[in-house]
Length: 116
Image 1 (cartoon, rainbow, N blue to C red):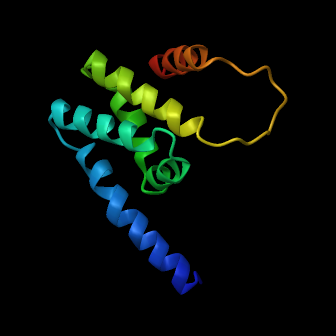
Image 2: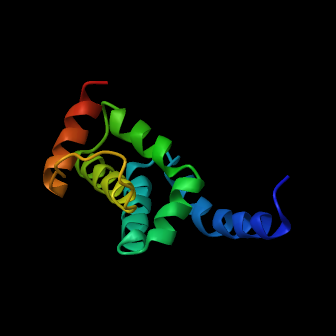
């Protein structure tokens, strides 16, 4: 059972991050794009905020948006940029690969997502 401190921290994370993710579910691509840009601005250089957006479920929705055939190119590009930022926000060393540049990583992610 989670501690009271954990529960209160989780409630704070949901209160601050959930409205951004909720806007990603809008049928209006302009609202989605604005939410992605707001999230991107908030996560720039902020690992804690990146973790918050991951906790409230931003990643599955961003991937869903990218997969839509009628997704605007600007929205798709900005979703990929935000996913890249979320993925690169942590310094885990699982493998000893030669690191890709941010641009190489974005291109690889875009190609993989387009093939889904």
